[in-house]
Length: 139
Image (cartoon, rainbow, N blue to C red; front, side, top):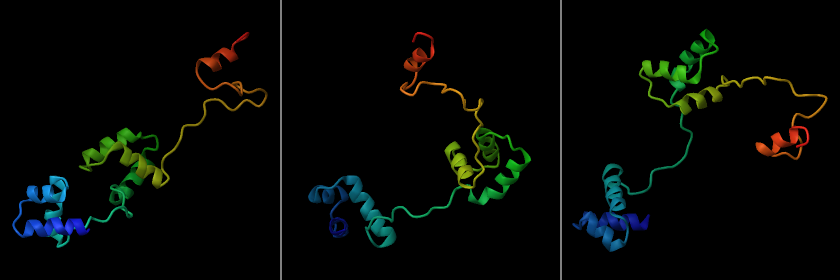
């Protein structure tokens, strides 16, 4: 914070941002950002990080729930396209994350039940070719 204040005060006393950056051995972009922030907020301090930001789709939650109830097999991509038609600027990950957060995401069921009589793959097989070789007779 002390360095930021010294750079800002040097610029305020008439030094250019580039000269202040060279003098205090900071990047030119940092000197520009710090002086701009001091002009806007009155302090060159860093903006707060983290926090609990609301979801972008929080205000559209009721519509999304109604749409999911209306068409339960809608895909995330289809929902994203409909949101874009409603001029909602959000990414596919944003849609997926929101659905997961409110408990509307679902996983596909397994295609076959787990075998109760014999394992379907050897315990020491890792994946891929080694597993296939151990499942074939004489492998």
